[in-house]
Each structure stands twice: as C-alpha cells, then as structure tokens.
Image (cartoon, rainbow, N blue to C red):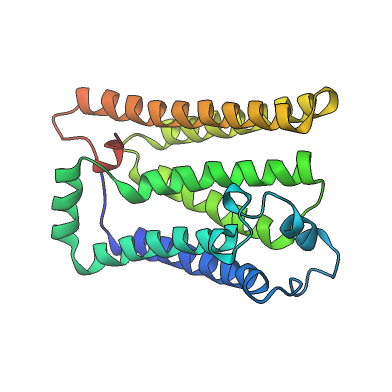
Length: 229
C-alpha cells in the first residue's frame, strides 16, 4: 500500500537534500565557468564538462547544463514529498484523481538517466567525474527506496524486482561495452539509448504487473504508486 508515513518521507527528503548539495556543487562551475573544485584541473570532472554530453541537446548554456536539471529533479521530488507532510489528504486525493504517482515515476526516470550518464563516462567520454558518480549513487538509492516502500508486495518480490532491474542494467552496460569495441560512437550510443528505453518500459511494465497481481489477490485497492500510466 502507498504510505504517507513521515519516516520514509523524511528519508526521501534527506536524499533530495544530498542530491541538491551535489548538483549545486557541480552547477557553480558551469555558471561561473571555473574548474570543478576538489576534482583537479584537467581531471575527469573537467573532461566530462567539456564533452558534448554535459548539456541537454548540446546547447552550451548553464540553463541546459545537466547539474541544473539535476537540481530541478531533486527540488521537485523534495517539494512533492514535503507537500505530502503538510497536505497529506489533499495530495492523496490529487494522486488518485490524476491516476499518477509523480515522484515514483520521476525517481525511476532519474535512476535510468543516471545509468545512461554513467555509461557515457565509461564507454564514450572515457573519464570519471567523482561528483557525478556520487549523484548517480543518490539517484539509485532514491529509486531503490521508492521501489521498496511503495510496491505493495512481499519483501521477496521486491528484491526479485530490483534484481531484475539491476541485471538489466548490467546487460545494457555489457552490450554497450561490446558495441563500443567494434562500432562507431554514434551507432553505439543510439543502440545504448534504445536498450535503456527498453529497460525503462520493462521496469514500468513489471511495476504494473506486480501491482495487478497484488490487487487481484486482495480486496484492498492497489497502491497509487502502481498508477504510473
């Protein structure tokens, strides 16, 4: 069942604060055009920032920088969870009316995008940004936390779901690595993005299937977290 208990919400808020801190730290050099502190001039952080993948659509402006949109991501999820503490009944009613659990969907997409960015560092840019990896760890922890707290199934089935997803991530990385050996970067990148889209669709399908099995086996309504369509 979906829960608005303060305990998991405070945990989500804590993760969002960590994510905001890391993204602010990464965003400042984009805005001020200075090297990333504590990463070493000419190091992995600068290599990632100077690549064509550090901005959405390749548009070189701080507004399109990935750290800025990381801020939007964490602030959005944080405000959504904060509103659950203040307007609990209103938010529950709104989610039921919209048939959509925004923060669960956002956490899933944020996790998959972090998987994509980490793959870029490993197989395309060939440089590692330590703070980007910290951000990816936070996004992954947020996704795992949401899956564990919102899926209305037994802990065994939750673990099985997460194992499937992370096995899928491993397969995507393996395919990406093998393709990068023989094919051009552009072709490899297109296939990697396609693989991640397939993984994302599969993740949402498995989420819906678990919820459907639960709801058909019980007289209780399915959790709003299952309503991601």
